[in-house]
Image (cartoon, rainbow over all chains, first blue to last red; front, top):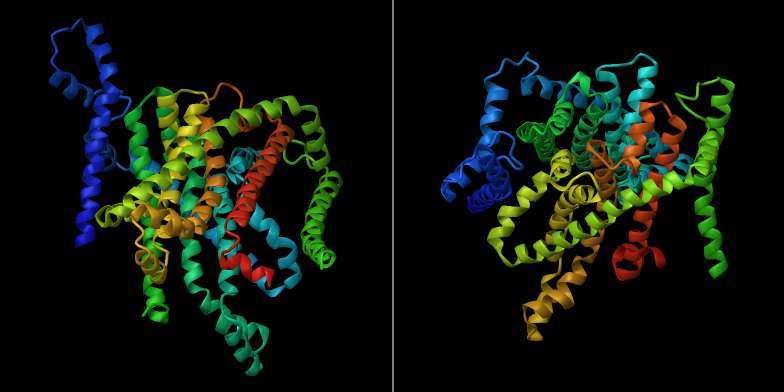
Length: 288
Length: 262
């Protein structure tokens, strides 16, 4: 309750700051607009009110973003190319396919790495190093290369989403499979458990918290991958395409709405995984 | 003793090095044997040749991008620490800001790139602005967690010394927050590179690594793309390695390093 109040206050403060910033940043644009229209008799109040309702403001006011969101999400048919549900669904599809592929491959590689020591010693440094590399730079190239093979549409973007979510999941799952302490591993040895049994009965269950943590990071990375991939092939639509289009034509309100839908998408995915994670961990007894 | 340690380090480095070389060799031989066209995958030797002949272009791109990365990184991280120290004084702000900070770190913040390009123009300041936004929140969240990490015993000790808030902050709480701060500094190296490179998709003064990649992809100069990616990869790894090196020097007392020395 107390923290809900604090969060509400901070959000209100952010909104107030946003309005103030919007008025300040747009004022000079609005003054130019008045000058062009030959108006000189405006009061400060007019100036503020009008700069919060410009068509192409430097910073749109919150209510402009909300009304545009309402118009493009709820009031437009989801099949229309103007609807943000349409574009959001494209991005979501790419994200989910990519995320599933990335997660499957990431977990598979983690299993292989944990079961073969020489692989870990030779590959792990590279996988960790790959985390420090801006792999997103590869995105435009992957799209073009797949294009050479006539793979177009959702697939190239899903590939990039998969690629971005792959590495954090591998690293997290290797850590998770490694997390049982030596005492437990010794106990398994006294039971003369085989490697496969140790893995299934000890390592895999013990990795559950790491699994959900790395799924969250992977899902967030997949959203970023899908959006960035859409920048390269923007004719197929998607939230990234809306961002690029908005930036070409100076449609700031369009950029902000696309941004908010992207944020909601990512927050929903991460929130869902977090919820599943908490429920599972409670049932497995990780949290009291 | 020293000789043995050196030998151990070499033994640690050998398997990954061998693996890396093997990948390069398979890449080179495979591409040549299967006659993979250049526009799909150039050989490592072709990429190296391209790199050597285009050093001036690559250097110009590097400087353009790194300006935005470093300046944005410095501002974003400093602001994150500063706000964390301010927030830390008020429990109310901490309860209100932290959940939001955690939420923001799950969002695709690179999306602010077109807005920043619109506000700050095509040159590096807009890239620095994207980097500031991307690096700020991880730093804020980590520093707040770090400031809370000093133990009750140590805090009590400071109280018995009659230390005031600032003395406790500087002598105890900031040092104990350092491992957390360095964690954020390391995460932020990658985020900063990503932010600057993606922001270049939305407009640049036709120079910069992100611009070079999308431009060369446009007219299928894939070897140049790979050369640029190699530069970006080495830059990112070096940036990370430098921060990790500083961390080792500054937080040598931390348990994670002590254990390795024993």
